[in-house]
Image (cartoon, rainbow, N blue to C red; front, side):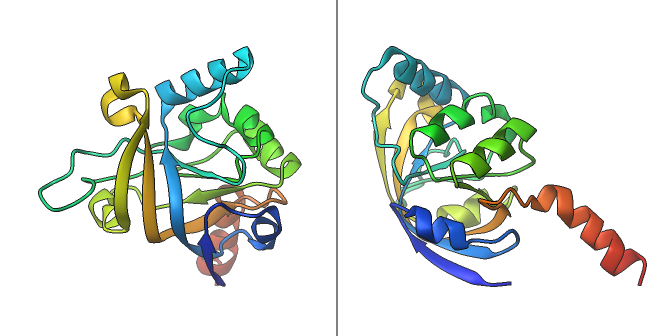
Length: 188
């Protein structure tokens, strides 16, 4: 499997090159947002209000980072279950968001939106939040401070690891991976 070194903001052409199962090292700016922040972002879009950050070419990481220990910009920052954002994801993809990062399966509606808007879903490792936080060089509060750790943060990351779970063609590691495993590992 290929390893792609990507820098944000992403370009649609490079997203199209990513294939299910490819590994990614992501560097640049990534925004954090979870359920409550997604609800506010979607409401702002529906009202025609400006957003607290640009969506075009951006990446949203589904995490609620822990407070920073001394000398670090961020505490543990593991992924949350992506399906909790599925109701909002098609809208954000239609506005130019090119990647989301989290863990777990996505709904059929999100898979279709990923295909339609030529985006990608990247999965990263649950339970590895302390290690993933080592890839974060800076953290800045962007919006919704009343949400605490679920506020929107602008993270500057370097070599943040992920796997292409759903590529822009809709190839889905969560659907195809178990079948491949059964075919290649169990029956051999």
